Image (cartoon, rainbow, N blue to C red; front, side, top):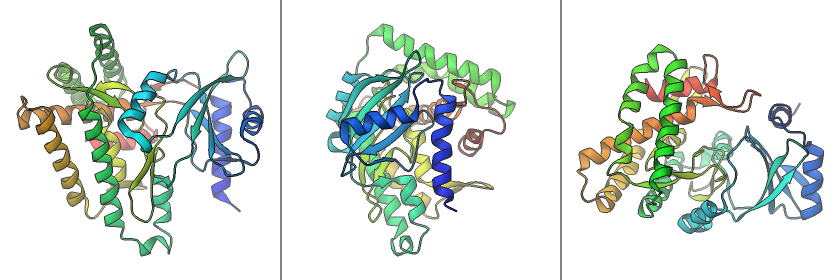
Length: 337
């Protein structure tokens, strides 16, 4: 019995049953075939808020059908992503919608080389994977991620004051929701983050932020760990620098039955990453002391953890605060307590 295939099919079925669309999988498949040709194959790792397939004779056309509950795609922001990250980012073309009164957004993407980090991690547990120096692979991946953050820092952005106020207000409101709904053991952390929020909007850069930097969205060469692509930028936005650092932790360990487990050589890998960021902050923010810069960076990272893992989406209820029994609660416990 192919349990991997069963899991993939379950994931796809869950999306169409819970995302609130009247578009069907058959309609999506038929559209992809009409534009790119046969065959059509679902990508091995599906997101909770989208259905993604590869189509065409060489499977080089990627179609993603996204829930409209997600933020609308911003073509100008996608252009900025491409300017900053170049060939690491697929060419992405919004292609309208499919369905009736509750449609899905259609996005056509260029296929990039490599496999997702999640697929690579599973491959490393195979006999072939054991022939690769996993420490070197992880170091290369995390080093390349650091260079991506630095590229975003070096291209700091500006927003109108009204948009900054809205951004800050939205973050504060989400923290208030978490303060009301998360268990007591998180409340001091949430309060401290909320009370320090102004620090991230004073003498601190606004930069491009991926907003979903996970193992499913980072592509690597599994033999070296080098980044070959970062995908799914549809929810990207401009935000305080460092908000996406929460995502780096998922490349430094794994969630097991008894909790989060870091890699054996975690301190060496983390030290290289931190030194790269420290040097970049010193270069790009010369008027900020190293201590103040590190304080703001840690605050942004903590805020990222809360906003990313503090909410769940895709179970038919829209976005809601995490609750006991949700997998995200395990990550909040691992990274914040």
